[in-house]
Length: 334
Image 1: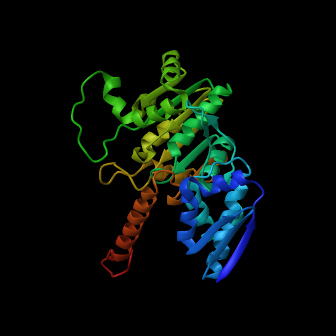
Image 2: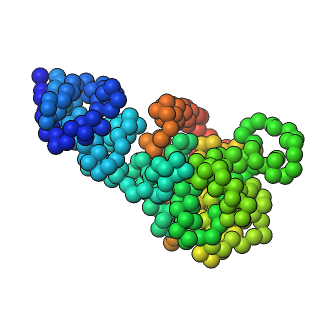
């Protein structure tokens, strides 16, 4: 039996790290087949495997460092800390204590929850154009809107412009009732949801009426020049290269652009190239343009979302490995 002792300075930190009904500790015990108990001013870790006990101790030490800096401990960031320790990146756990972007309408601080999200936020702050590419649930849209709201509150910009292409996700919706706004609103709903959460419904409508906030389909961007604006293009994988070029050239003086998308969820017709894929290839070496790739490790939704994304990635990789090689008439592989 192997044993490790971790001294504890404050009892309230133990309560925060252990979680409700010790749910956080159970996750660590299951991950490393260890047993963890609190003895007054110390935490005792025991287990049959020396490496498992050592890794469990590293996770706990990382969590105590976070809670000492005022970070709340949830099952989500416990799982993330476990993954960092398993990769040998336990020294990066302290980076999770990131700065607050803004406060949402419910009074809760909004900040990056993973290393990837923190890189994404820093890229938005330090670059004029930022591409955020990653799977669903990585916070691409929400964090971009939070950065826009923060810039607006600090009077760095005068207007927030949110747009996305009106492309159906594999289903034909037919003719929708109402005027133009009624027809495009269903496509823009995720952007509204983020703004409602960050600003509150009343404040959102007030800024919308004043023209400080604009939510519109991508087709409405043609021919415009957007000065003093924070512009976000969501679901950019569904743009064509021509649409992407049109959008990027709308930027005026003192403006910032964030382009988000998931290259695994392209809903364009067969044979159409994604404007997001083309843009990241063409623009990657230009100063003041950042390209941030997020992965399943940065998913901050339900834990099952991570596993679903991993399963699909594995399935796609197996399909690629099993696909037959193409040959030219002379027998040379392409």
